[in-house]
Length: 378
Ligand SMILES: *Cc1c(COP(=O)(O)O)cnc(C)c1O
Image (cartoon, rainbow, N blue to C red; front, side, top):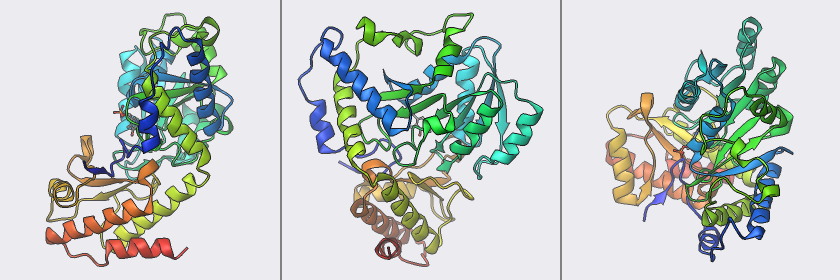
C-alpha cells in the first residue's frame, strides 16, 4: 500500500472505513435514513457557512459540476466561464453540452483571477445567466479569491457556480457571506472520505432559476431538481449509496470537531512552499497558492516520471504529476485533509529530497530540515 500524498484521493482514516462497513438498511424504505441523509446535508451546510440546502449526489466531484450546469443551463443561455486553469476552462464543456453559450474570461494561468480586472470586464458585458469559477484549480494548485469574485458577480446579477472540490475544508468557504449560489464539493479531497460522492449547496435564487426554466433539465441523474421534496415525499430519485454516506458522515463529524483544520493546512502548506523554494525548486504559479496542494516545476535534467517512480519504488509514497497543458511539467504534493499532518509531510519531504538527489539534482537546502524547522519556529 502506498502512502497517497496526492491532491485527492487522500488518506482515509480508520473511523471512516469502519462507518462504511456498518450494516445496510434499505435507504429507500427505511424512513430513518431520510433523517440521516438530511442531517448529514445540514452538517455540510453549517461547515461551509450557509443556510442553503445541501444535496449529496451519488457520484464523483465531476457529477456535482455537471449537475450544476445541467440544472441551470437552458439552450441559448450565456454563461461566463472564468478560466485560469484546466478545471476553470473545463466548465465550458458542461455549459455547451446542455445547450448554453460559454463565454470564456481567460486570464494568465499562473496568476489568481483579479477581481478588479473582472469588474472592468463586467462593466462592459454582464448579460450572463451564471458564471462558473474554480476555488482551487488542482492541476496548478491555483487558489482563486472566490470571496471577492462571487459578491462582484452577484452585484451584476449573475448567479455563481463554484467548484471548491479540492479547497473546501482546507481553505475557508463562506457561502452565504459571498453569495455562492451553487457550491460543489467532493468526498475524496480535504474531507478524506473515499471517492464516490459529491455535494452541492443550492441557494434560493438558484432554485428559482431552475423553477423558472422554460425547458426541462436535459438530464435525470444530473438534475438537482430531481431531489425536490425528497424529505417530505420520502422519495429519493435513485437509491442512495448508503455505505458511502455513512463514511461521509464520519468524515464530516471529524471535520466538525477539528477546530484547527484550516490553520493546520496553512502551517503545513506554508512550510512546504518554504522548503521547496529554499532548496532551489520553483513553485509553479506566481501567487494564489492553495493550502491544500503544492505544485512545483519539474527541475531541468529530470523528468516528472522519474521523480514519481522514485517516490513510489524507493519510499512507497505516491505524489501526483499533472495533466492537460501541465502534463509532465509539474509535481503535485497533496497536503489536504488527513494528508495535512506533520509526520506524513516530513516523511514526504525527506523522501523527495532523497529522490531528487539520487537523480543527480543539487539542492540548496535540505527539504526535510527546512520543512521541520519552519514548523518548529512557531
Ligand atoms: C478532484 C476535482 C474534481 C472532481 O474530479 P473527480 O475526477 O470527479 O474526482 C473537480 N474539480 C476539481 C478542482 C478537483 O480537484
